[in-house]
Image 1 (cartoon, rainbow, N blue to C red):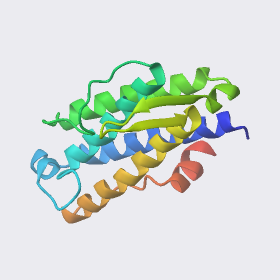
Image 2 (tube, helix red, strand yellow; image 1 turned 180 degrees about the vertical axis):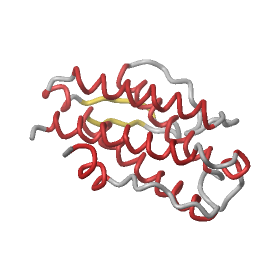
Image 3 (cartoon, helix red, strand yellow; image 1 turned 180 degrees about the horizontal axis):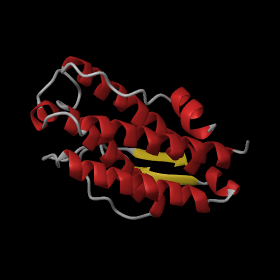
Image 4 (cartoon, rainbow, N blue to C red; image 1 turned 90 degrees about the horizontal axis):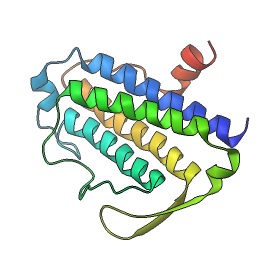
Length: 168
């Protein structure tokens, strides 16, 4: 499997995991989604919003456009429906973007400024890999908060994707 095929597969996983997670979260009350919790971003919604914001920041880096963010989250948080729609559009953008990449493009270096300050540079492949890992990492926080409700989170692991979606 080429690097291009591998990263496309992982971006498909990311989009699937987001869909599975949002489907489960749509069954939870707004109060629980907004409830302040002992976690980095304070609530389920703000954690989901953070995932989207970071995806949007790196989309801007990849396209050479300005993103306008001064933090890795927004001051106010959209509703679950808005975040879900934005994330779904973002996931499709990344799948379309990866679909048109040439193998050699994955090795191109992208220079940028970190939102928190400082210079950054990553290859296109590393940016895409980071976004997959970043989403997975924060979905772990969301799953932990779902257990606190208590609600059993969906099985959104890479292995489940491989078994139920990719290999099917």
